[in-house]
Length: 159
Length: 180
Image 1 (cartoon, rainbow over the protein chains, first blue to last red):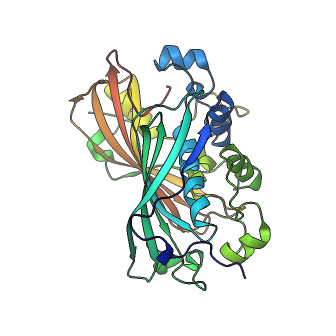
Image 2 (cartoon, rainbow over the protein chains, first blue to last red):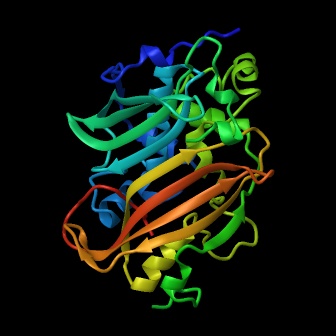
């Protein structure tokens, strides 16, 4: 049996997640766009991004940023962590040459009416300490070593 | 107000539109490409023994849900562009707003998406604002829900977007321009 890496009791409000730093390159941007089947030119065509979008370069697309946020959260929870919801707000773009930093904190924790333990995290994706995208993510965490949020279905899963 | 489909915009609020089946079943190649693009080493996606025990078999990363609906860049016989969030583009056309950004995006995850699933999506316009003036330009905000279901009609996710369509002012702002 695979033991959960993180239990609900291990993540009280105020818990800070380890930072994730990543050097963004043109490959990061283009790979993210292709992996999310996003063929729009401002994610691979420098000239288009500059002349049509008025940005300084191509930039990370939203679905790719969602994948970065998911990776960040589940790096922390381990495989038993199950995302309930994510909300993003974009404040600025992330370009090749940027070092992006993801940082997050547990801001709420609880157990819902079905007995599912959950935490809410405020996560920011920043460049040079300026938040480019902010995210509120909620994840279900096991309440004990025998609990597994992924086994919840139908009325027992209320995200 | 009449939209490009011929129905007044207020009458389209709350109405399910553009029901679409994904072009191809959920498959692992794309899951691995997605995980590789963000260096996601979650063993649920790489180790079948872990997936079997924890999720009852391989699943796709929840945030990939919209990936399965983005049309191929080209398809034989196709003569016009297929746009993944058609309601958004309808509103841009209707109001004559050449630029747009997505300012807000919420995804709620329900049943897991599994390999081989054939997903269906539909779009629901929730609201359209009066004309507003912002630092980007003058335009309107709108809210659109995209619902995703699997082949058993089980809800797998609901994605909610807030878009702002506008006529440009000389400024660069946040959000993601749609490039159209």
